[in-house]
Image: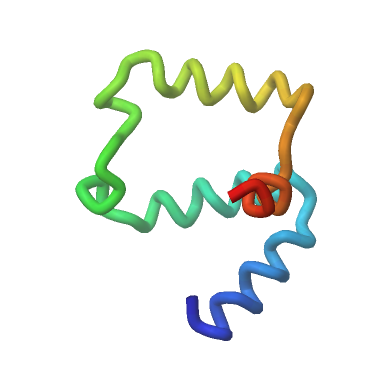
Length: 70
């Protein structure tokens, strides 16, 4: 990522979780479906599973924790 994008990411990470999720949604809305490679329409259960995971965040792991494991 460019330094500007890194600064933007760092600023976004300071937002509350709900605002970060809203930002992700807005960014995805600007991306053509074929660029993502998978849409909710490709898997009827995908949206339901994402909503379930969003509602049940017990045991949630931060990106920093996942990144440090890699």
